[in-house]
Length: 289
Image 1: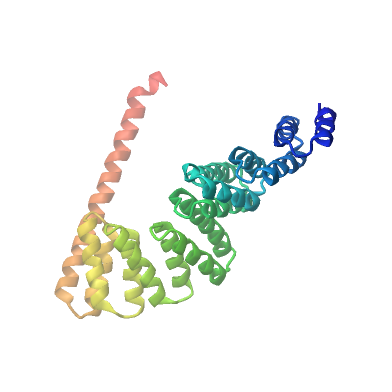
Image 2 (image 1 turned 45 degrees about the horizontal axis):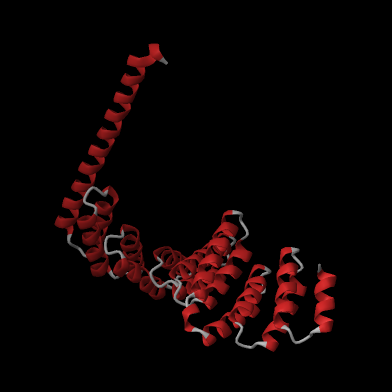
């Protein structure tokens, strides 16, 4: 069949239909390079042949030649705005493929696919979030190896790409805190608090930094915020008591120490009760086990 198409082309080299037939046959046979060449010939003869352009772009896309595919899709959109969503659709395909790569542990390949997804559609929120997630994972690997400064660079990229990624800000804050870059760490935790005002972890880390910097009034305010969010949090009463001690507010500190002990006793009592109930259940139903 290919020989027949080639003979037909020799007889009538200016007939675009012959090139289309050849391109379609080459595509079916997975002879993609030859198919691309044939579709290119069609477009040279008929520059406004949208079907040929789309077919060419599809082959470029499935063979991972994303830049060339993107350029051809842009030509299609310029010729006919009815196809203006084609890049948006392709961006979604790239995200889906990238997520599959993530599951397979192919993070570098996934990151590349997410980058292309963003180029195809800069407003693709899924692509932006997915890329940020990969960057956080990369940053965590660097942080675990002790490369905190490199990790911070990567975390910052993740925050820029996905400004609502709480995990990225949390990891960035922890890395900065480890390097004793306390003001920058506070900024990261404050961003989390704006995104999620009830995030106990962020408030706790802020409190730790305020303690380290001997900013005890701010540390006390943070303790009170945490107590309001999580009144059953045993440790925060101890932290508040110690902060009040630093401020020489001894009566209030004593009250917090007592609250801490009372909550701790309740917690231990509850754990013992649950343990006893569990043991009783095992005893009662042991014959059936």
